Length: 305
Figure 1: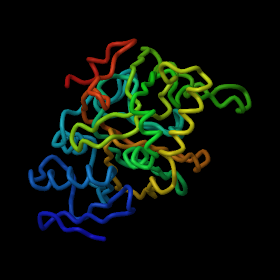
Figure 2 (figure 1 turned 120 degrees about the vertical axis):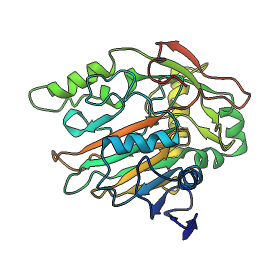
Figure 3 (figure 1 turned 90 degrees about the horizontal axis):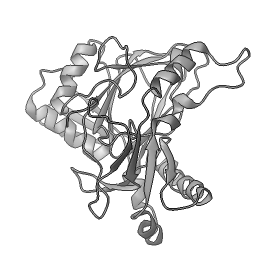
């Protein structure tokens, strides 16, 4: 299915629940407002959108385009020493983000959008999968919706994929991976978020979970694990996902308030490098209008929104 927008943007759906490819656009900071509005509309509707043939886009162009969607945040609340303070290199040399997560949910102001650009791809593997967390919530039976509408969860950066050490590697932990992990956790953040958040632009309800979740609030650890597993399985049902096979020049943009994603580590020791920027979002709000609460850490430097 192809939908032409503003006589320039062509939106091709990739699945009924999530994903679309946008053709006819060269990303950059000089896009017309109508084109930006069309991209944003497609993004809100499809949760993640993909652009092919963006080989001429560099960090500066990626940032300039991102600024058209909103305020660009710092690269990361804790990862420092990057070449550009607003661009996060995601490099397989320092570990692989192979877990289901929503970006930066351990702070109060979760990014609204993430923009990911392929810089160096392996010759095989390295695909990324996104899941629609709105569809996951909507697929729950009424009895489970009634339960999760009132649940809250503690998210922390100490539980990110960077904390997963490969204990099977001969000779112990890889030094670069360990250094990155230590930097990632150099400042501890814990934030209490509603398990069901209301999207500030669409009004949709979505499940706010992923690997940053440390525990659910107000239940035992056994109950927390069981409920988390039940809801995560609903998020990652294949019907709620789309898988993107990266090509040189590709860019992906996703609504971080309505998705989780997983980078598949199936490319052996081949190098893989992506550059990500994030667009500032607001504090999540529960079904009854209660905002998220910071438990530990101050992330005001990450985003001024």
